[in-house]
Length: 412
Image (cartoon, rainbow, N blue to C red; front, side):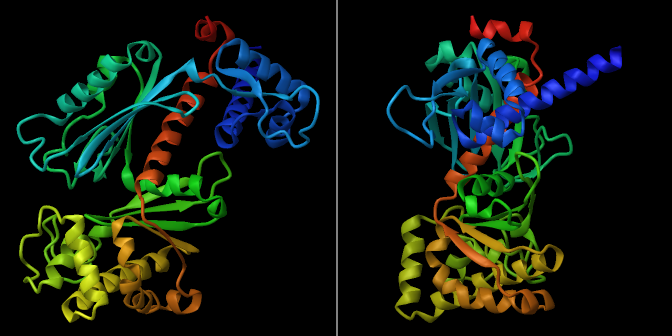
């Protein structure tokens, strides 16, 4: 008897997940379309939909995707009850800290953004800083904080084994600190830590439907060089892998990288590496803390005007990226490369050297250069990836397992 009850409960949870997943991916829609996309019978879908509406997790809405729109009453579909829960997203990178509060439907409620100075965490612990930022958001949204469901952080660097902090980060003094524990203890909600490269790849798949079944790499080029690798999956979310692509060794004892090593891809392809080469600064010179966008655009203009040093700098950058892609292709068969960030503005200057280096291996010669997609704004894929991670975790871990009794308080 106990086994039968457990099996029934597992099936029930799985079916609820399927319904929540398809609405999360596709948006509000009719019960008939949900049944078609999930493979559930109309009877099962009706029962599950009724439970989710009664529990205040979903709500009845007009079906905006109705195929045969005509006269008469509009079809009624199911969508998220936006007030069922709220999440806070924290994007922490070398230049800024941005907090966004979203409702359960993924709609932005509030946003607070502050610049992050290079010495931000010299005198103040990063966990204290994050708690202060969340408290600022909480004071602005007291009613929404009553239904806070989760907090999710996007960070740069190498995650620790328990995914509660970082082993290394380009943000000084961020590594070696438990970033999640104090938040979870203070606000009593699940907290999640994600590597920015993972989110960049994940969010790109959500934004580019053509990549739904592709294996591809996303490479950020800007103040740093980062990568995410994403594989198609049978589940509602793609499996993704991020690597320290920018810190892969390109040239032994080569140019000095911000990480302290010599010869990293980033030391040639990031904006500071290009700046250093364009002005003939010795490779072992300490990298600039920041490169103003105007200065980088000036180097691009010099290269297009025929300046040899600037052209050489972009050739070096393209070659470093190309050999990195070359090595990646020898391990994983990828069909697309998505280049993101401000460095894409100079892709035409990097492209010849990048393609030559990519083709300089057996895999490159046989498979050719993967299709390249340029996306200047890396912020949107990262934000979309973080949003979908946070909301989908809320769907799977909190709302799908709920019993009717446990969920009734949401609707009240």
